[in-house]
Length: 209
Image (tube, rainbow, N blue to C red):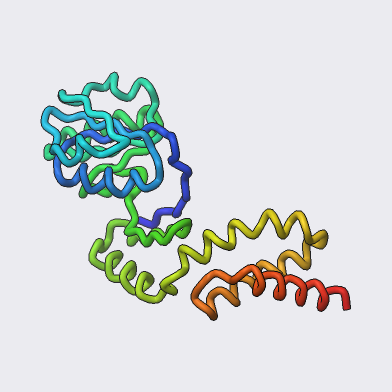
């Protein structure tokens, strides 16, 4: 099965994880970088999971009423396959996105292998066909990225508004953005203020000719 790679803003959104073991811990750690508010429900929860900033723990078994506040997503990560399946059915009835650990047929979304560099997020999925294949591709992509790509992207983001305010032509702005990116990649670092100014002036001059 092929899954479409939606990118979803999770900052401040509610997420529910049912299960308190190593698998739940791994899922929580990957999610928390994106800013959701997580609730973990399980009779027993690993101390490392319970102590994560951004995680609230409910120490009991899952109840269907736990879905009443409509979390943005649900992860079923218990050690009981039947319980996970029942959680999946409840979520699908309520049209809540659900991920069930190690059971792709019970999922409405999958966890991709992630490459994260600052604002850059790359998700790799094989549709559950080969987690090992996804990890291999992740490593290939990760090794091929410039070392400073995260820093460069953050810097470029900070340039957009000043350029928008100072450069009236949309066409010229597009040229400037592209040249800034290309120049940063060639140097593997953000530009200095002088380098930035010279590049913008050169692009504006050429476009006026």
